[in-house]
Length: 247
Image (cartoon, rainbow, N blue to C red; front, top):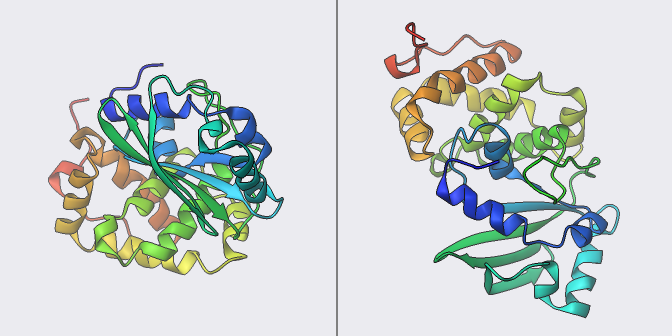
């Protein structure tokens, strides 16, 4: 499978340079907005690589021990097309800056203490383990609760949830897993209202996240499904967010 965006093609090369066995054994699964962008037709550009690594089953302990014994380069099975510029390791995660084709891409293995990951999925374009759809919902619900008031985030967590919502309703299990850590539904409702009532900010966010104008309507469709779930009204759409009547 060939991705449209050059940056995403670089990310795929990095992903497939990892040693999948150590990721599997450490419950370290690729996730975040980049996974969602790659799963769902590159609806936005995502720049970094994030893995979620479970603390509950000693996954993070395992991967840190592996690095201590073998070195950071042992996380990779192929270093022919990439190089490690620098890395740091602490209680919160492993951060690696990886160079590929004159581009530095931030990669993070996050020590996840808030929930235990489900069995991974394996999309056809990679051999490494990826977060289940339920865990994608869980992560994005938590991220939205953390960041929805920060305009510099450009509502990316809400937009990612909107795209997930186009695939299915929010799984109750995802909500339960997230709310073992802290509240996520009322913050989601607040995030939707902020997004719906600020059209200039909304348009700026869609543009800055490099969402193609032909996908604006799709994104708002997902927002409106979330709004309906929360008992809110549909979005008053800008012209660019309206359905194309000529398709």
